[in-house]
Length: 73
Length: 154
Image 1 (cartoon, rainbow over the protein chains, first blue to last red):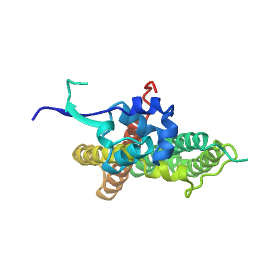
Image 2 (spheres, rainbow over the protein chains, first blue to last red):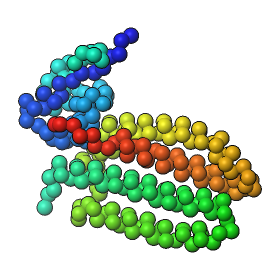
Image 3 (cartoon, rainbow over the protein chains, first blue to last red):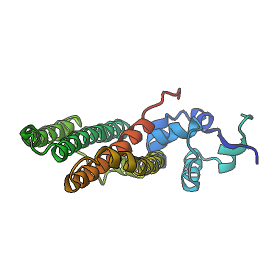
Image 4 (cartoon, chains in turn blue, green):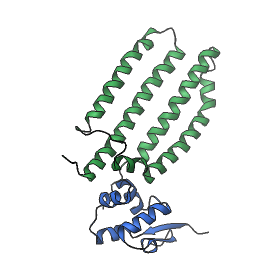
């Protein structure tokens, strides 16, 4: 199986809504560090957190997260 | 005056990290003194160090509380709950816990060899204290390392 990674558009969606990491984190009930780690690809969020983030940003989870191989971006 | 949530959240995050750093230092100091007491029980200087250590720990705890700048750590607040339930922090704690477990296991044989020359009761005490100190210190130090701010634009 090839190396699979989770790509996300969190930073883009956040920028569209003019939200800081801290503001998004507060609305999702986590700390800024979690949002930062997800955006940087250092953390794969749980289903619950992915759903919460999608809900806060008012987008579908699929448009926020996608699975790809490690070489594609 | 109501403190803005974002500022309070950052303040709580910093307080949490500082508390863990202080705890790590206290654990290292107390553990070091206890190991020394177990290895060299005849040296009175170690037992004299215990009382000042506890005083330093209490002063540090009071100093920590002051870093909140008049605010109080409220465990029921949304910010404190966000920190306690934070996925990134929980992931880091799990990783640190796994590594600390392996470190503690791997240290047993070298520790045993190192302390083999001591009478059994003292060696047992030194082993126990060294294991606890090593485990807790590894857990806290690794968590603080994993949880550090990696500057990332955004």
